[in-house]
Length: 131
Image (spheres, rainbow, N blue to C red):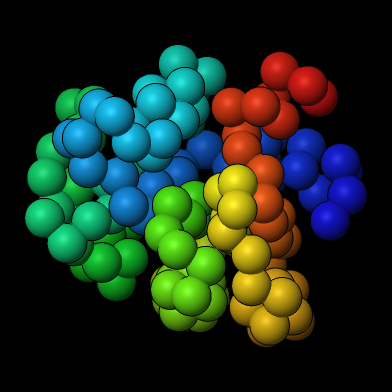
C-alpha cells in the first residue's frame, strides 16, 4: 500500500463508517473519529450497541446504514477484520482502512480484487498530517 493509496482515501472519501466506535472515550476509535470530523469527514459509528457518538447516529452493522459509505475504518481485532472488509465490499464502499495493528493479508487480496482501495496498519490521524 502506497502513500498514493493513503492520500486517495484521505482526499476522496467523505463519509467514514467507523467500525468499533462507541462512546468509550478511552478507545482509539473515539479520538480518531473526532479527528476525522474536525477534518470535514462525516463519521458513522458502527458498533453492536448502535449508540450515537460525536452527534452522529450509530448503527449495529454496516448493512444497517441507510446511505452510501465511502470508507470503512476498522477498529476491531485482526481476526475479525476480514469479515468487516467483506461487508464493506457488500455495501459498495470505495475503500477500507485497517487501523494500526489490524492486519489481514487475505482480506487485503479479496478487497482490492473487488476494486476497493485498502490500507492496513495505519491511522488516518497520523497519515493526514504526514501527507
